[in-house]
Image (cartoon, helix red, strand yellow):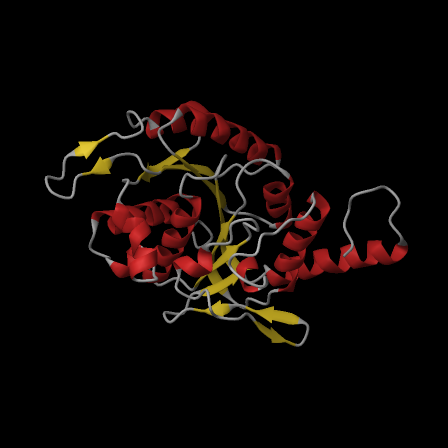
Amino acid sequence: MAHEHGGNLSDEDKKAIMEQNINITRNLANIKYKIAVMSGKGGVGKSTVAVNLAQAFNAMGYKTAIYDVDIHGPNVPKMLGIENESIGVKGNKLVPVETDDGMLVASMAFLIESNGSPIIWRGPQKTGAIKQLISDVAWGNIDVMIFDNPPGTGDEPLTVLQMIPNLDAAVMVTTPSSVSEEDVIKCVGMTRMLNIDNIGLVENMSYFECPHCSEKVNLFGDSKGEAFAKAMDVDYLGDLPFRTQVSESADKYEVPIVKAEPDSKAAQGFMEIAKKIESTYFKKDE
């Protein structure tokens, strides 16, 4: 696979890179709004937020797709209950998997041998795989696409952001811990270096809500997401509770909590954040 590392590319490699970039532009041309969900580190619930936001936009009537480009932890198909499905092929294009309620999904998980297969690749192989996945999937007309990005500020998330033309917003996921916040600051810095100005913050696991008395307990310290967002000069999109039902819904119902328990406070929290994203970043019809 041709990649852009090294200074001595052959004419054939240069042609392959040019064709791939053209394919990426064409594939994403009919997507109205593109939202990247990001995190400075793993373990903060980024994929859970990405999947539930996609489900929320779908419930709001948008034709929605989710692109799982977190190649080391492609968990989106499992969270949506479609991990045993296979991505289709039509001509020289990949056809995304469709959920029972019409959401389109592409993931590296559909392309590896089994869920337990580790992806042990060097940097150029990983970035090359990301580019190929983005360039080879045929989406059609989409209102909202959620990109579940790899965590951190390395080659993989950088590659994704560089490959997405006219990204409408980057949504950072953090938790109430200084370590998570320090990593998010780096992630925001990287995003701004790429001239992406629309940046929002979601504080996940902000508090634990007792299922018996509804008392709120700050497991990871006091919630400071709004103040943190203000300090970074990014948009504060809201907080989400630490609820076992959110993670259990993927195992028990094989669907996100927004779909499994739409009346729950957790589901309503995701819906409110989706509506905040809509009102803040969806400006193309104005």
